[in-house]
Length: 305
Image (tube, rainbow, N blue to C red; front, top):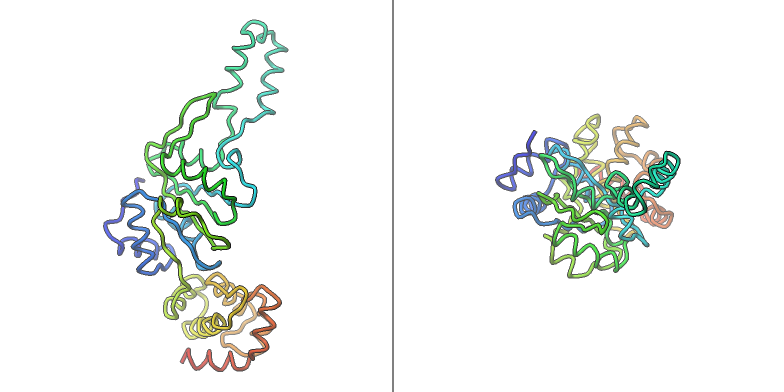
């Protein structure tokens, strides 16, 4: 089925909402412009606010493939672009020698054979560019801030041309550019040159009402009243200057954990027993307990009404 491009940000908002992703107005507008202008979308924000989920939901909505490049320190071009399958090439050479073909076609003929596309291992960037389908794939370049400066510079060329040249084969050029989503947790600053090639959006933690709606959508077994209590408690926790404030992912995990314990109302005992689902660092857990779990629960219940 061919993907029908949205006509406005409202179409994006509704399309994602049907799949359980409740985007803010600003994010919906950024996604719309990215799709309309065929420009990469650079999403930056704290961990757990739903940046990666944007790409996953977009792929479902567009009925297309999600191709993910997970960035890390030391990532190089060969791991992102392509590699040759040396094992298959070696087996091909041995088979040619065993059957006598090697002597017939000569050294040049053998070299031409082993550098064919069937011996090419396509990594995420080449997969996204060389994929010929009705709907362009979604290319997720996840946590670009974890990669090195050298990889950023290499990525600039790819995003400018959507073209990759392999000396032994030729040039692969995308007939239709992939839908590119780049995410960053801002563990370091990403160079301006890369950001200039993208549309930019900072993904905030959701406001109270939207967080309630997200929890209800992702954990449908919880009541609205309980979702409000969870969202209210998380809202308070984010004000405590923690090392890693909980994102919406942690809110959802916490709601699930509380539900599994059979709790549909916050109290000090259930908060303490499920704290590991909400905050993932010992120092943050200590700070939360020093702040006072009882006070947290009382304020959450009052906020939830």
